[in-house]
Length: 114
Picture 1 (cartoon, helix red, strand yellow):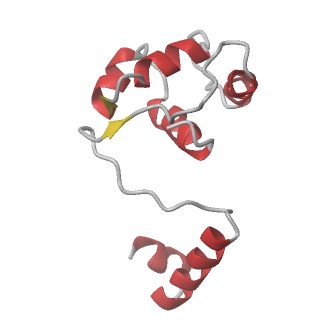
Picture 2: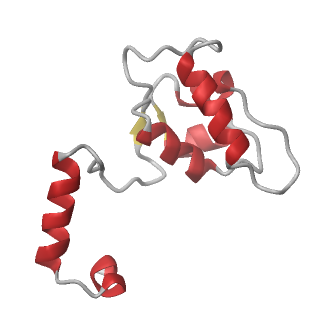
């Protein structure tokens, strides 16, 4: 409803656009996440620190770094936070304070890692 109001488009139009984006693999449909939602690293993901996905993560992190203090996360730290099928709350607690958890979570899902 919020998107319908913000874009001033009828719901039917939004549904058709969403179907088109999903069909052409430009978007994915995901459920709304709660703090107690369980997530896990997808099978077959190369979690090695020297992997291509680790390099993409480091590059994304450099480009989207907030102006505040704090060191960048390593890919291993992030994978460790989500390993073993943790809840989002547990994964968030596992990472350092000051980390923009929501942005990291969005990137991981967009890349198909979770």
